[in-house]
Length: 539
Image (cartoon, rainbow, N blue to C red; front, side, top):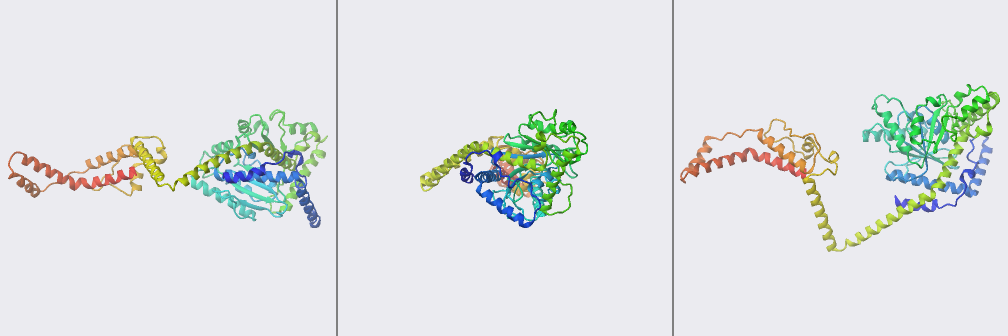
């Protein structure tokens, strides 16, 4: 991991520039349907513009560097303060439709959202050469990406199958371990969004009743780090005063300093506006979000029928046009365009998200560089120590000393466990009596017909505690069987042999010999079983 991070240092050492005002508009505008010849000329012109624009090249390099950092952090469980956008909202607030609009193509994410219980990290890469979307998923346990997936249905299937496999493995209803998908496309922006499971009021059929609370807790954990930007969606039909999830957002970011509020399905609200004052009051959202928080108002195509990607993007652009046209012509007096126009429409939101993320990337670069340099220095020191140990392996005396120290350490640890210890956690490493019997391969006690249940049989114990429990179990087994009868022939054979020796000790010695012989016959199997069980406990 650190070796890969060290390779990223040069990519983050980029000259400062004002990213918010210099993002190339050649690929931020919403694509519209054009004749193929004209579109080819535009594409060539965009490629030339992009290659000649040093600012675009720098932002692209910085974006790629952070994407690689993010992939490495996810694969190896590292926590890096990388600027990220976390999308949160209710399950019916249009979050899935917004993600598809940002991608520029549909992949049935709405169906997946109803079943997934894992975060989805969408790494969108604007690539003019990708005329069709290329989607790749990061491997679950490495930073490598799989082969490109073209079929939109296959993308949804991968998300669903990975979610089901992990939840089955962990035996949970939700999991914070993210799925990472990289989408390269000529019609998507350079943007990375962490899509979280939608808030729900009630668990689905077959899910634990605690699922809504688990989702809320997981989303709060994902959104709490201060380097993450919150993208909070709420549909326009819900009034701010009766919002179900606004309080949850306030618990994470009380002042909305790092929260972008999006009012989705805005077209459903348009018909309620009659004059300019009414629409301006609604667009300002004053009294609920604070004076410095301006929501974005977005409407997207409602038609869910199968259409081409180009037609899908044309519909998005048309909805933006229709919304602005209605505000201008369908409302008496229009609306305050100077104040609110830049907050209306999907295109405005998309441009802002990309420029804001690039600005955060640039601001975070110095701290990220310092952290990576510190990690690289730590790894260099570790490698030097490992080299020293490797070189020492050629010294036989050193190896002998190391082996003796290791053996002594193991012996001390075993002694501590036998004396009694609470660390490591017995809940994780201890075993119940039933587990000891099963895993050791030693079943019931020989000659004992009843099931022996020693005290604390259901507790997970190890070390000295488990040792004492086996000893107690042995006593219970020994007490539960009767000493077998001794035949008259055996008694006579021993007594007569001692009778000729004279003295009063003959009878006593004969009795002791009879007892020893009987004990060997019925206690020996129990002792063998006890020794095997004790060896397993101490092993």
